[in-house]
Length: 143
Image 1 (cartoon, helix red, strand yellow):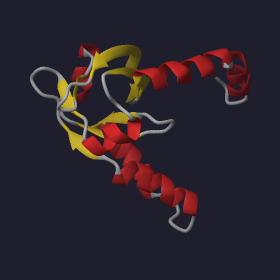
Image 2: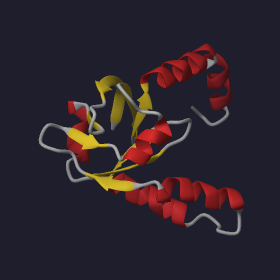
Image 3: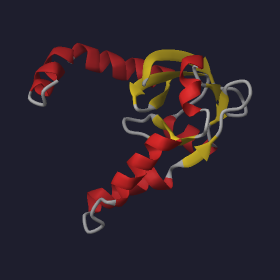
């Protein structure tokens, strides 16, 4: 399970270190893709297979389903972690998420997210202010 929040630097070649605690789960390869809210998602190969299967079962007759599947699947790329524990974030994904300089890698159980540092701070500040309201809404889901 991925948890935590880590700040790392993106180098000029688009490489970023994956937090050491997260590397074993991604050792056999991983998939990076466009995420939601302006970040990137990283899944283990095993978890990505589950996500891709669900996406492939969305009804192609619904425009929203097609758009979401395209966002996730067409933007996806298989990547490996190098000997220094880094991945190369493809240029089109760096552009999508506005990545440069420092990035924040967050663990969200079945995936990692990569955020541009300021975008993460702004997003985090907005949901922290609304955390009580969010928790009340999630109570209806049994959380």
